[in-house]
Image (cartoon, rainbow, N blue to C red; front, top):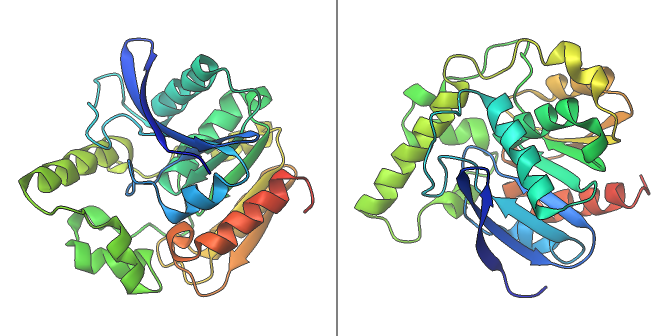
Length: 258
């Protein structure tokens, strides 16, 4: 893998902070509520097989949160414009948790633009049981809902703790709240899942206490040409806990081998 490129791409009236690396077919990687701006092990592994484009969504990684962002559908349409601006032809789109919600909306709005869709423990469709309210929890309280191996959460800790890191944390919480505080799903999205036209892979951690694997089973039934793969011993942050396993599944799926 070559050097990570950090650039700014103008999409309409907004400057998108973008990291990219690798070579091969294009892969758009959409971060979850945490991890924006970090080049994680999963990114590194995928860049061995793909040209990975990892944008920071509005309000994350120190970027401004514009007034036009009112829901995940706004961010999805913004990301569709980013794909057009970058000239990506039917990329593999990988979305993790909150990013999975955005990826799902993208695949519904513009099914012809998505080559293959990978949803890693996505939110966005109403679950049978309400999601834990992470907004009222201190970070140590939230960790068990996200990780099976608590030590893996350290990857998301700021390299240089201090006032700037605290401010950024609260800014990102505000961005998440804008999208998911009222409700962490789009009430119309489930009935639109049949509009997804690309082959779809759902990846779930077997120990996910945030969104149960049974929700993944429902999504696999509702999305045409979709299947679910469960990763043993991982929680909601399966892409951080088991990056080698997740990357391998994505590579096989993107090749059309499974």
